[in-house]
Length: 282
Image 1: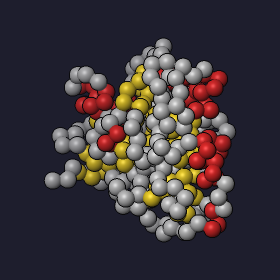
Image 2: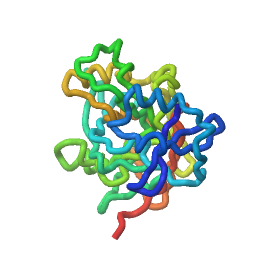
Image 3: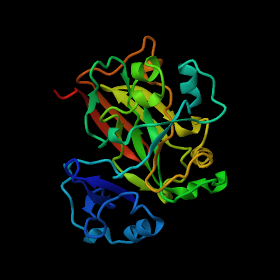
Image 4: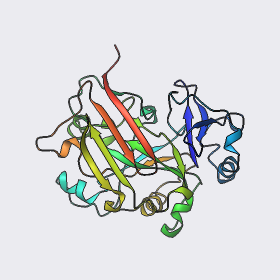
């Protein structure tokens, strides 16, 4: 099933997508899609509803992040072989982990806001994983059972903050609207193989990223199992699993986002996003 959240910022309601692609309102059955409600039993009960009996929502409504109240927003760096190569890095021997501030989370079509002084804001299409079950020390063969669903993420990154300012990558990953998530949370049963998904991203109509999750160095199952050795993963936690080749930093010469640019991205089965680049509000 495809779940989503719709409405004005801070007032989003839960919804789903019916067989005809229309948005249906779930707010009579659940208060929101949050860590508290992303349980197997709740998702199963919602999936069993007759969507034809749910209220239809205006298709032009704003979409929010497909998960609300996210407590942890994790990410994996250098997790595609060809991306590691384009950045001049060897394949890591273990997953490279970092966090994005949850305050960067935005809707899939909300604008990308250039931070003050930004000169190297970059794009990164990524497969997102939303945890559905509390887990620690989970074996790799059981790891995908911990997943509530998958989503599309743009891991927007300010490279000078990330690389040139010293310290952790989180500084270049956490500005407001640097974490578009959605449009949908697609339940695990709809994604046959998370290592066989096409990812694409274009800037102003020019394709910059076009790859597959089969180029991942560490699979989704490996990432979840690995992370669970260092922390307890909780329902609602979001993991961005890395980006393929084609980021602005890897171009020759490097190219970065500027005001007015339009970014389109998609992952097969997980929908599309479109963001326009705007300046920081005064």
